[in-house]
Length: 108
Image 1 (cartoon, rainbow, N blue to C red):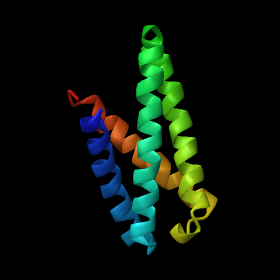
Image 2 (spheres, helix red, strand yellow):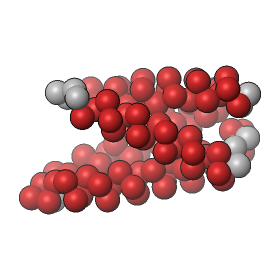
Image 3 (cartoon, one colour):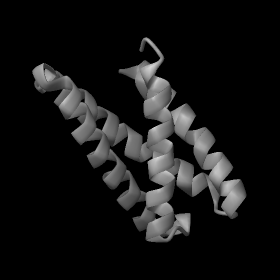
Image 4 (cartoon, rainbow, N blue to C red):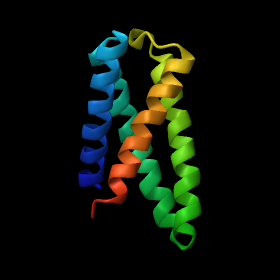
């Protein structure tokens, strides 16, 4: 569980870094919120995939959508992030698409 979590935090951290520079948003609060969200959502993902392993693909898709929504909400609600809801949704979608797509190619 540690390797996928570290991989996700690194990939999403790179996306956050680029977004923070591009949109002139505070880096540290967004990285903190992203890391906290990943600690929660990665645990959730591992749990549901283990519980419903017979339906792996459908559970993975549903869980990833839920993770995207939860992370969007957390990014938006942390006021120090200075993100509007649309920005939080956009950022979370890009973070999760990047980590999911890259994760498909890695044996972790």
